[in-house]
Amino acid sequence: MALILGIESSCDETAASVVRDGREVLSNVIASQIDIHKKFGGVVPEVASRKHLEIINTVIDQALCEAEVSLEDIDAIAVTYAPGLVGALLVGVSAAKALSFASGKPLIGVHHIRGHICANFIAHKELEPPFVCLVASGGHSHIIHVKDYTEFEILGQTRDDAAGEAFDKVARVLGLGYPGGPKIDKCAKDGNSDAYSFKKVSFGKDNFDFSFSGIKTGVINLLHNLDQKGESYKIEDIAASFQKSVCDVLSDNLIAAAKKVGCNKISIAGGVAANSLLRQTIEKKKGKMDFYFPPLILCTDNAAMIACSGYYEYLKGNTKDMSLNAIPYLGIDLK
Ligand code: KG4
Ligand code: ZN
Image (tube, rainbow, N blue to C red; front, side, top):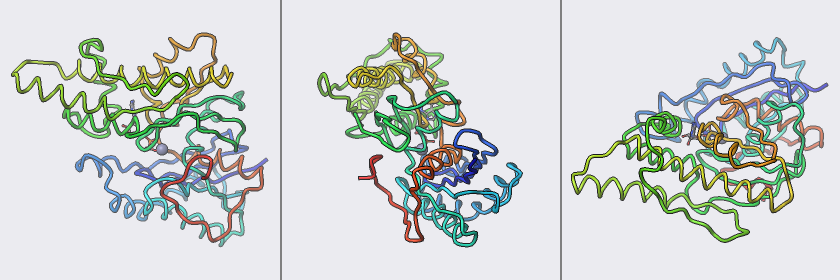
């Protein structure tokens, strides 16, 4: 039996969690900074670092307290060290290093995207690799072949904006506010998704890369044209049509990539995995494939997923020393 303390601070959530044997969540504390960044229309990195610093010790204490364990009971401390905002990452990494040094417990560095994928292991106790996972968040859009708990191959990725970034930017031009994903998701429910069509980019039959900047620009141009002509329109129709275009591309590429590698298990992870249409679209298109997705609370940033990924790294003996540093850009294959 292993108890892992997970720590996450890569963007605008300060989070800590205690997880038993990788899959059983004993506590999952998340302090979100969304209300602070909302007024700026996006995450302000320097503000994020300062807020993490103010609250991280309290969040860690709360996670231990809610799990009814002490630091002595913990077997290893897992922390997100890459990728993310470097100042934000540094707060979590420094806290984890200090706790590891003081307690003598092993330190484990977790890749944030590996963590997102692990949210599926927490939600589905029976799920084991191999499977193909779409990870779509504010900073990443990847299709990953999860070959083993610590072995990953990138099958496709975005060539420009991340899917969540496109949701956030389009929400901003539609005047819906930040974060854009949930706002568009809600607004689109009252719109007609066939009202407008946006050009989808394909990079060829066996290429599973994405491009979202064209769809985003399509929305901006459409709005300009409608405004210039003085035509009336419904924001809901634009939101619904945009969302449909993105969800079609994400689900088509995920399913095609899984077929290509001969895998009949697919999953989604990351903030955009919370999107209701994405879930419905994959459900509709997946045929006989098994489809796994995490509950909403495990889609967006949290530390339970980091503790889960840390557990599997711990089993492999992948511990770090005090030279562990924050790395803003790093592939899931650690290259
Ligand atoms: O994984 P996450 O919490 O942080 C990053 O690692 O980036 O993802 C945040 C992103 C934001 O871009 C947000 O707009 C998007 O996930 N998001 C959604 C939804 N909920 C959050 N996008 C589409 N539909 C949603 N329901
Ligand atoms: Zn994330």
